[in-house]
Length: 352
Ligand SMILES: Nc1ncnc2c1ncn2[C@@H]1O[C@H](COP(=O)(O)OP(=O)(O)OP(=O)(O)O)[C@@H](O)[C@H]1O
Picture 1 (cartoon, rainbow, N blue to C red):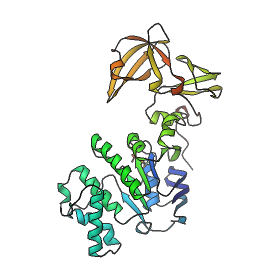
Picture 2: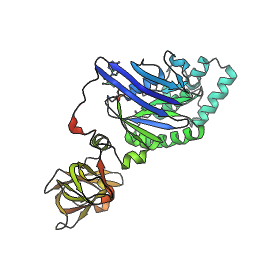
Picture 3: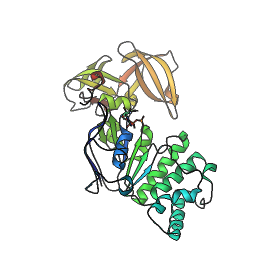
Picture 4: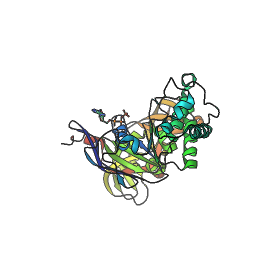
């Protein structure tokens, strides 16, 4: 459905999009994730035709989009600040794209009604946009983007401004809705929770390039590099040398999954794999701060040797700050990271 072949966008000497290859299949929901400035919006804008390419191609349904203006690409756009027309009512907003495509009045009214039902705002046609809540406005923006039946729907931080609870609810609704409609979606977000809940596949970007792509589970379980691991919030990363079924690390010997490649590398222990035991067993640590995260607690540990460690524990298992504990590691939660993309490399040279 959508393909980028070596898509490149430069601003001065800097490549905001650096030879990106990406394919999105029909009915697939792909979420692009990455830190601020990694090129996510530039990617969306290039696909939409709002940003010209300096190299490479964007193909939609197999056709090169070079020179095809935005309104002829058949893509729906929903941007961060959803830009509804404040002087128009809900129906006027939702019908906007339909009018642009020359739909008649009756057809517009029928389609608007259908879409408002879909997004959970039945009968809202005559309401003033300014009187809607943030979540309702978001639904109207979504209905507007879906109205002309775009072959590709693109969302830029679709739930960015809403509060957490509403975002979590809407993201589930969106996924269900897109599945029902068979919509192909390319969405951009900096919120990994949102991306993982919405996407069939996530694409993690760094400095205009794709750092990793895979299903949410694949990326979560096997971050490809230190960059991806840290971006996902995993900070238990240390240099390690694997020999057989264990690795030498600054935290001592840590068991690794069977079949791990031998030799030096970087090792990640997911916080769920940090087990607390009696103080005279395993690696001696002192319990530092505890951060409550809903149904679990992130416990920060100061090991006798090596960098700080984070453990994820159930509320009832989290020891008091200052307690002495021992730590052992669960091999199933240990990941050996690719070295190619190490933080230590620092910034890449800007493309010439
Ligand atoms: N019009 C522009 N002129 C010059 N530089 C730009 C322009 N648009 C984007 N950039 C630069 O290109 C890089 C990528 O920007 P982009 O907006 O695509 O990142 P992003 O990942 O979407 O970031 P954010 O999450 O903050 O929106 C950044 O370094 C940005 O400063």
